[in-house]
Length: 153
Image 1 (cartoon, helix red, strand yellow):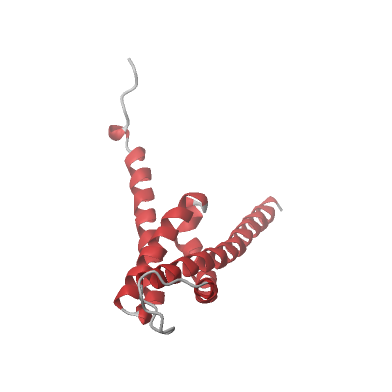
Image 2 (image 1 turned 120 degrees about the vertical axis):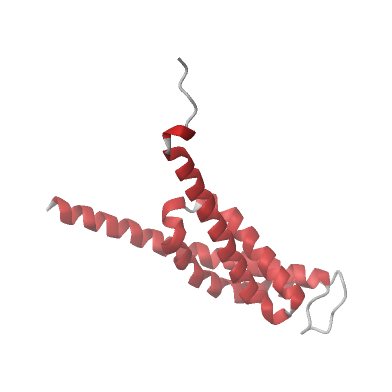
């Protein structure tokens, strides 16, 4: 009976975290998409409006960027949780993943407006990999006794 209770508790905990990753991915994608499209507008790389000069910005860019970023974030959020965030947690990952997404999306949009979305997703996953390997290095570095500082004797 205890084993079933432990399994149910584990399942409930991971189901809640998976649903939270969908919500956080939706919100994060919305914010990052709005920032990416705003940066593209300010740099003069909006090729659909006819306003292609440096410094152009309109509040509609926020809405369009959020409209594209939110569903993509809701899709990649659970993938990130299942791949890495179960071990690292959400809090230490929010800022690096947002930075990776914004840099990737803006860089891809500078190359071509069609590359903005896939480059943003690629930037997200590159930041996720960096976060994962940084965490695994930190854990493996502290697990060996020879890397521990000597105790005061």
